[in-house]
Image 1 (cartoon, one colour):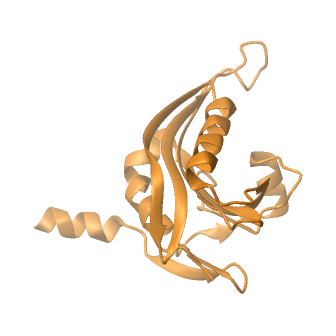
Image 2: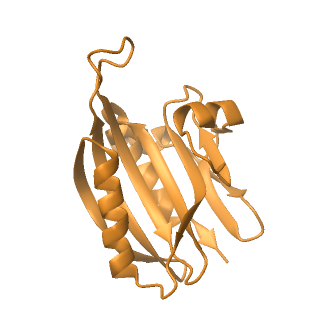
Length: 176
């Protein structure tokens, strides 16, 4: 009983954040918004995220993005296979922990929870070691509209510490 109380006390308290008039998320209370430089160094992209947050050590983060991919008919099983293929191609190795389609607050999300590896480049100084991550990513398809993407990332060595929190964060997403 004492052990359970200690573990529960360690879990970060989640606070609601309104991303815009349609999207509300919950993140750990002590996290802060990423600035543009922080995001561009870690996630180079043409499109800025709707929101991006990180912990004090800048190791664990959560972002909300809009994908350019549109699904006119809302075919979630086909979209799931497309997103999975894209994820498998982004990394040198992917160990899928779970995947599927789940309903959250009345909307169906495609989700993937996995560990990934990007091999280092032995020829480049500073990039020799592989990058190992734990990721939980969810996609919300609005037929004929752009797809919302919710992504949680942590170093793989911190997966045990953050996995339950990531799952809880994803289950608290609200989109009108």
